[in-house]
Length: 247
Image (cartoon, rainbow, N blue to C red):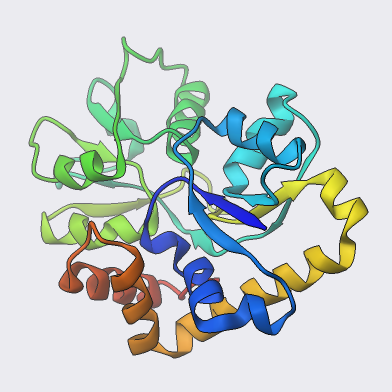
């Protein structure tokens, strides 16, 4: 079975651990993590057609339902994001972003800035400048003084703090974002419930293992995520652990 991931990142470390350390095989499932550089809609439709067994993330599942791409299910999350974004020191709160430039990705971060625009009646491109960038673009953005904020996963905190940025919480106290989760089609759940259950169980076990076994987890990350140095991998891991670990 294939699990489609968009690109190598520390956010997906529990999935890599589940495969490489053997949690999938111990639970009697053969799952292979595959990086698929297709649109979210294409990945969802491949899952609906049975060409992919699983995909990420929870944001993609939500968008699929809202846009009517098909019936999908979010099964579990790997991370819980507590902060809305990372900002330059001169930004006091989220409303200070009006008239500024913010960089986002193509998933949850894009939804979050559009939520903020809706909340306060801002017109994208007029009241706020939204730049879309890849994972590497957002790392580089912390060195660009023209960009006031970056909305991204918690792992980016590593580069944010090194660049002197600070974290700003969500606009409402109750808000959290469950991300990087395991998703599949509703039909797959109906047809193969035991197999889906065992896959979720393997991911949960791998998530706990990732939190409790730093050196083993870092070794898997170094093998899987070639864009990051050992120092960056270890720094990202410590950031995630300081904020509650993979969850």
